Image 1 (cartoon, rainbow, N blue to C red):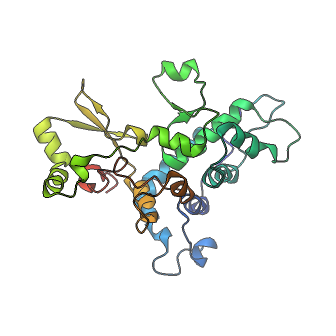
Image 2 (cartoon, rainbow, N blue to C red):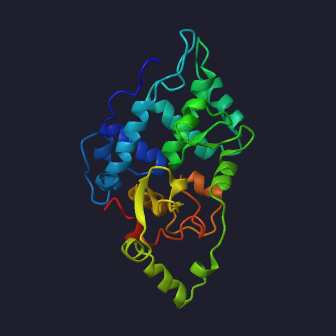
Image 3 (tube, rainbow, N blue to C red):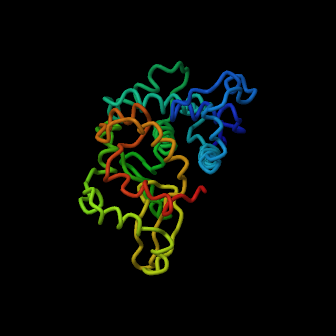
Length: 275
């Protein structure tokens, strides 16, 4: 173990992260590191993303290369990490095994990469990209003992197939039939009412797949609390068809804008914990 190679995260790095994730068209001042020079530059929304940026800092700081003296780490700088995210978005026809080979085969190297570290690098990129804990088919016993379950991304699945698997698209007619009763039901689903009438408690989660997961034993609902992160994704699909494919969504670095995925995204009173 050699310690995280990322070092201190700068504002410039966060700006580049936002460009990679959400295609932010930064103004000339931001690109030069001198601050915004035009009204409407997306970097002016950065304050709303402080929680997500802090999570990014925590995740990258926790990356400790798993290498032997005769191996080199899979990630040397944040640019390597951003390169993996870009490849995930643009080369979705590749399976995980093919992706790993493509990412590291062409990188100049005099020493081999650690297999375990290559897998961890991809997992870290996925986690930052879609806020889901993922792993290869193999999970260490220490991870399982600590109760940290990571969704396995099998080596023969493409990234879009993995997304489809973990976020299955199932319509909810009672919430999406366009009737007045549906609108009334959605308006009734507020955190305040659920706490008062159902006795539910809310617990924050950093794993998007756990959003709205109910722990019946403890009457607790998990809430994904990086709402500004989600809103940036939804901005990109505002003028797109609601039935956009997973593949096209990933090219924009967004989740499919489907009723199954975001039936309550329209209810900020319930999940808008960033504000």
